[in-house]
Image (cartoon, rainbow, N blue to C red; front, side, top):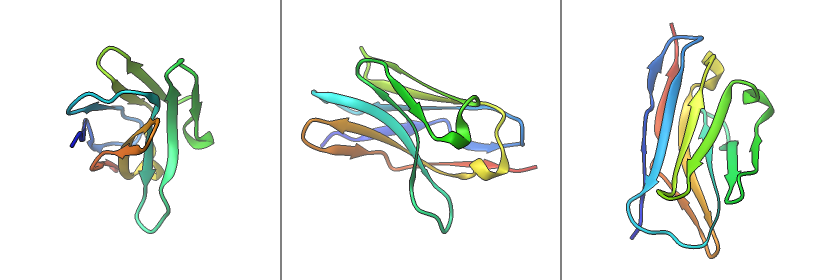
Length: 115
């Protein structure tokens, strides 16, 4: 079974930066889009950023201008560059692949923004 492997989370001070990466452990065909979601403690999971196979992107209002999503189509790898991080960005971040027949989810990576 193909799994999504995430990396790049951790502890960072407010105003700092982190870069998340996500790649599948095997081949996934028929990908429509890839993205990142997050879930803070006691809150519902929410979309952070998404990028389609054609390169169109959309972002949560709370991260616009601070986060950038990108992908390497050849490697089916998606990245999330997070700058100017705020304490309210603290959450578990999940990678998502929107494939023709199903969704794939990563195991989640913790991002903590704290001084």
